[in-house]
Length: 305
Length: 285
Image (cartoon, rainbow over all chains, first blue to last red):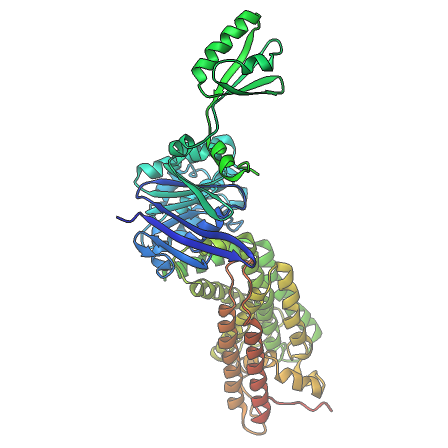
């Protein structure tokens, strides 16, 4: 059975710049799917083609079993979207905006319920220009779910939000999944993708370069786990390199970063070494390979470059 | 239909909340009324000028009010958000035009009311004819406003484009200066601009058509209405064709063709008016 969303060989150019070069992915029903990539990777162009803001040069997009280009109007009845920035008229209130946008759909949720759910009741009659960034973003999401969409697209929804608003938004997105909605999310926050997404497609230079669950992707990373430690007195790099399973040692602002093939063996050896040296261990933590490592391995670039 | 009505009502409401829109929509037209009332001391007061005053109000709303509102919303990304909605842009443009029509109509009623109260202008002799002529004028000029909004990327560009349309019509188009006061060459130029048809069609509703020497007064009135309707249809179609959801969207290559076709159509209207003697030329003695 085909997925809720099927994108095949999508291409999009702006003049001489090929922003999307044959992107394909499939999103299953009730899944949170992430498009992860640095700025300019092509994820927003891909998403804008999917929601109908841009006309693709080639490829096909199927949403809820419908050709999204030929049946754009019907598809729009079934999807909701949060753009990178949602601006409304300065003097419109959340209640009026919800009424206005709701009037375009066949089916809508109750406005009172949305105001309650997105904590906008107190600001229901305040002008848009007086809302904070977090409140504006909550209103943008309320507008996106107004038509109770089967498929929700979120383009970097937490960019520029404070940590509390970001956490609130994460819980809203998880709630969408628990309600059985399918979500497509673009982000360049690696932690966000790891925490929220069931599956992730890493996109770079307009192409999908890897796709899978966060765990699958990380398991394919060739990077080794790292032990980061800080001791009372300087450590001897050559001695550390001779410890069990250690592959490399780096000194980084007074901390030592040890790459190891087997964390448990290296830690035991390390503690013994510190004891014999009568050196006090001030801090130690273990870093597992992350999606960022996967990304660097695949592209040779950092995620936020 | 629900989306059309809600967008229309919301647009009206947002205009009423916008101080700048209120000043330009209602206060400036009153200022023009006072200016004309002070300049022209003819009796009965203002009956020969009210068509000019109302045309200036509609022109202001069409060349500046509506396109500034449309382009500023587009610059902010409001129309980009509308693009995600399952509604045709034609409905949104139509409701925007209708909202502006209500604004210029109420502004015109305010001007007529004040003219009757303050300057003792007699009541229009045929309000229905006046309303029909006013509506045709609004349709023609609001269509022009759609084109201005479509081709302008910024509100600054709207001001510049608006002046290109507004000033010639005010100065030599028979709108700011009455046709009978213009030199003959300017009257011929005005025949190729829509302003004079608007003024003459509306004046007919205020004074009731006096018998012209050649007996063509009624035919002229219908011709003026037809000319305004042709212009309204052409400009609205071109405005809708050139419509952009986002400022970043490029205008199609066919833009020049459409603009040229509109100008050509209007040249044909002017030529027809001269050919069939539908636009009177006053000889200055």
